[in-house]
Length: 177
Picture 1: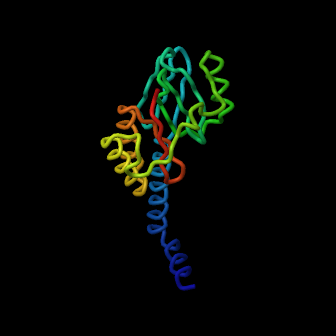
Picture 2: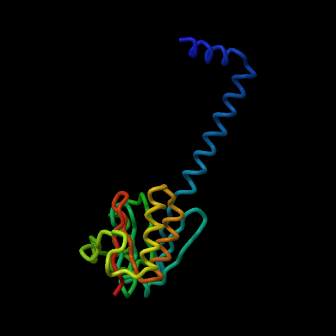
Picture 3: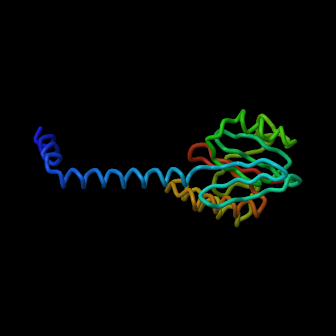
């Protein structure tokens, strides 16, 4: 009860009340800007442009051989089944499908390579030492909830022909064709 009385007494002083209001407005602004920074835009035309946090990536129509939604991720696949993009999005899958099919992109209802993914365990056969090291480092990044590092390591794995999907804190992998 004393805490409530203390808080009530703060608002009785106009200077303190003004400071609390300004601090609340600043905090709200910071939260809003951080949320805005996380918004993903997808432009579909002769090329696909995916933008997030002021960074845009564009993919030529000829490079995109399949498009689908995997959970809450928009995925674009290339000719060798490599992931060109895997971007978390809040866009409604039906609207994405409509936008892509209207422009002639090959939309799929599911990942055509879902059955090719294997759960990763350190030292498992089928991966070279470099890919194993990258997956170990990525596992650490996932445990630490370091999305930026996990994303960079996903990109490095892609350069080595390894595609990764995450299911909760577990990594599944497959090689490109």
